[in-house]
Length: 401
Image (cartoon, rainbow, N blue to C red; front, top):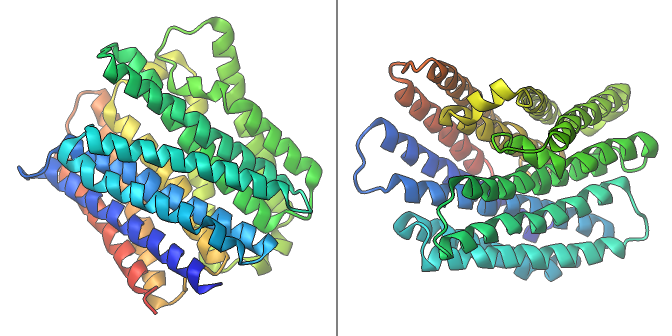
């Protein structure tokens, strides 16, 4: 691994640590008094930096690393300024959102972040087309790039409604969920699937891999309405939504069967730490897909979207349980993270914090259905946030050398 790439990986891990630190502050604000912090503004900074500074920055770096492996490390110079630009816009949002919420400077940085994603998508798409060998993983990458660009329609719709002072709540939610869906179910998920397919299967099983890709690709647009079932949608759209949920489960089932059939040949490629992380990510994804299918039942959909703890728990399941754990597992598998005693302890503590956090959020969500407040639940969630931060701090210290 080149020194340049190593530095970018270290930066993404530092960004993840910052995300966790803000998470601790947010949980402390809920459990105790912290008057100097505007909860809503800090939450915006937390979410925007988590998307741009951690996940998008990590994915961009890993995609560039894949390209460097195919074309040589000289390609890193071409993407250096795009990676720098994404970091600058991410830190701009981190600094401005907590102080002004949606204001001139924060909106400027978030808009520039979208334009950086456009430039990255165009450049990466062109470079993929120059590769002599076309793998199935490239379909995943291109769909991910498309979803990243497409998601910005939701962000610009929100901006337009705010500028026009339109206060229709359903329209706001529809635009917000549009952006979120094509980010975490599109850009994040398809990038991760492309990376794991490239890592394990690029030279084998083209038929079944193409089938898996087509099932997920066909479902991505109608699956948006899984996040918008509270709207009054036509029956034919609802049928497409159900079919998209089934298609994703079918595609994931094919993927699990493929991994099982090739388990013996995959064992030498993965360390025990990598296997454990990828297994946890796979379990989280399985839960997520089953929850999606369950949400197509109208009565369940009304309940889930009506209670904030359930929505937060679902988002954390996807962003932490599926995406973050996968990215860390992939970094371990690719030798991009040093595996030592501190790193091992750190990743164990961090993953434990994620599991504890999800369990507490689940308890909070289920009891909220009965309008019951669990004693000390906010303190427990703060403890989970501190646990995740502690694990990431050890993980970062383990990379110092």
